[in-house]
Length: 98
Image (cartoon, rainbow, N blue to C red; front, side, top):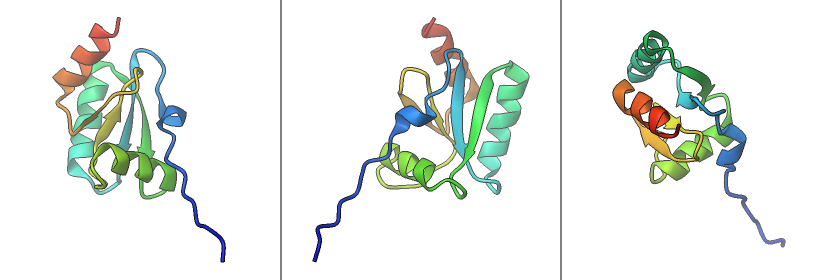
């Protein structure tokens, strides 16, 4: 009998370009729809990743949220993340990253 190993999710593969974010979401999430709309109005570029379609993305979200698949989870260019952030928090963090 072999030893089972699991590899930790690699959030670097989802890391956004400077000035943008990666937003992990699901199609049915009202908070996700609201944040997308707010990001659009604020002119913030984002990549949306559906965690129900991407198992690796779901694992990244779980790692950030203590084992929970809480969305929206936003990943910033510096590798930090925020769960269900206000659009003002997103824009402030992007602006401070310079």
